[in-house]
Length: 121
Image 1 (tube, rainbow, N blue to C red):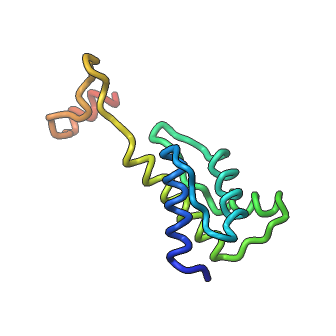
Image 2: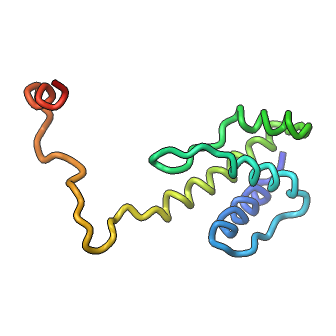
């Protein structure tokens, strides 16, 4: 299995790329970098942001590219994806632009059966 330092270097490379800096890839990581880039480009997004890369997507990538991955390779790709998702979450700005009116995100009132019936009918 690869060392924790190897995984950390790949995760740092992901963050560097997201910050428009040149990533420093460790030796022998080109296939993992390519796999992650391909999988990340094809990832699904929801209204909350990017979805994690699934095991089935990694398996399909391996099959289509005729590239067998050992379990530790999948763990590395998932760690890289975790770095991607963490960077996205930390850089997300939920504050509206200056001067834009917004509605309150939550209610000051506790949910009661009457309120539930009023909303849901």
